[in-house]
Length: 309
Image (cartoon, rainbow, N blue to C red; front, side, top):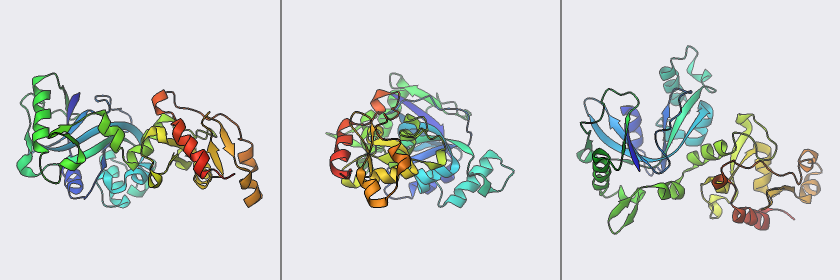
């Protein structure tokens, strides 16, 4: 496992540290070109506050990195972006990107999103000193492997700091041991992370129609969270908004063999639907990464429980 210490905006930190019950945060970067490849899912990402604090004040489990338009990022994370409302978020983006246009013209500006699961914000008396090996003037932060002395020290320091009432619930415990790693990501991916992970898994194209217009694409749960589903790529599909509505309503489904199916009820109930019947029995586009493909059991559930006969 790796640990990454990243310079963190104090206002962003303060806002989120006062938000109750946060399951994920978006550590956004205003630049929309440089990717973040320093960590893999399950690695530890730490918030380093600059002067006068000069300390590690919290962190989270690295989950995913994505580029997305500002409007889409707000829809996915809302206050978990570290801003009280969309207008404030737009102003922040415009300021950091040095946009000449008014803040409300930043909707389609692309920013980078570092998605962190199970974030934690430490009380001041639990802040962790910055190791002397850390390059304080680095604007992009620094990574340490757990096999190194510094990496091991940081992981132990976080484990000790997290043994505080009110913080421990964000991590798994096994006889007093705080556990990090990919299991946290799989179990605790939030709604915002789910939206970006699914969009990237399908290369920002509708799985059924191939539509590429990002504003009309939505990350759909195969089995809704309200029915026992979960936020994970294998429980998701990227669908055009109209197909998403029909999928949730049971008028269309995806068979476990990966083919799109349209219910006769669409025609019976609404006397229309030709454009959807033209797609009937078409194989959907699947993610290249097999681990991100739809769970056949979830598809079976949708066919059995939601799909209209």
